[in-house]
Length: 221
Figure (tube, rainbow, N blue to C red):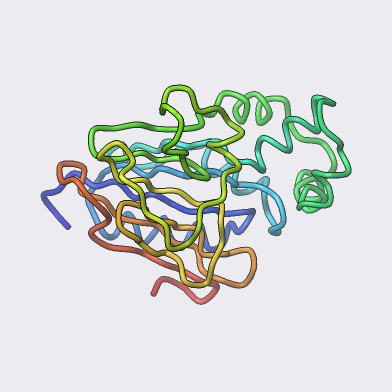
């Protein structure tokens, strides 16, 4: 993969720090530099949400790499519950209990501020990176977090997406990572016993991924 400008889009991590570390090692072995985009849902359900957040907040150790992070619906649930604008019980039942346990019951303000400031979408010349998906029936600039963080897309659906390729997570499946036409889903259900995966894109080339990297509890495969 040398000589290309590459982006590695990582699916839902959900507190699976061990798999994240293995995947990051594999990414850095695949190219001398590039971008990593985390597509949201860093927290909840898994064993070490705090460790995942701290690892990503710290950023890459190699200056040849750039990391970008998007907000997922689980970050949104956490923030809404902590602000009192949503039921705390709803978040706790959807993986918040494990997150609070990893933090020892108190999430640092710096972590909450960091999550609050995460963007919901990245729109580029060839691609759209987003946590859940986008709705082609609504102008892209008018789509809110109710779509970008929560939308479910039929696994066999592909639209035109304004001439761009959409890469997202949010809807887990053991069949992922998977590309259908102009859409790639990289939520491979790591926290449900699946793998943690990323799609590899050539920044200068339109269309879908040129490769996938996946890892499980036993390493990269």
